[in-house]
Length: 199
Image (cartoon, rainbow, N blue to C red; front, top):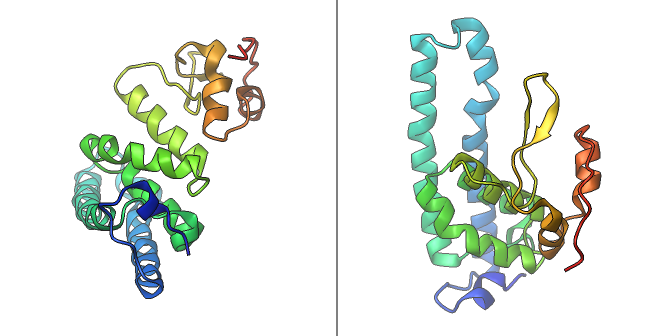
């Protein structure tokens, strides 16, 4: 049984083994709800059209559900802290991140530090944390810091969204347990040529 949620901050309740089982099931169920409509939207778009009244209603339902799921997750996080992999398993731990991804900016900002602490304890997945932070930055029209977000140029070539001081990106990635940017770039078909500073 993990003790991450307690060791991070004394304000959180330590969950018993039975409570952790219940939390695991709860988080996995919330994740199923989080993903259900998102797995259906492409079929719905084909049937009704992207700009149809039906799709407008579809995304309204998703938005309302996201708010409900976010509220349920916040109750858990505020009571137990960020539950790590050794607490609830990889799927339920990843569910927290997935739900946070679809939550309000306020919620993302509030719990990002908890997730980073969990990542540094190897209790959460570093790539998920990098995506959370980088998406927040890109959405705010700021340079990303881990290089997890890509887009396409006018010729449809995959490129990175702007990266803050790209010569230091490997240092930032390794701090949270990610491999260097070059291998990730190669997977995406991007030629990475910026040499990296060691410190």
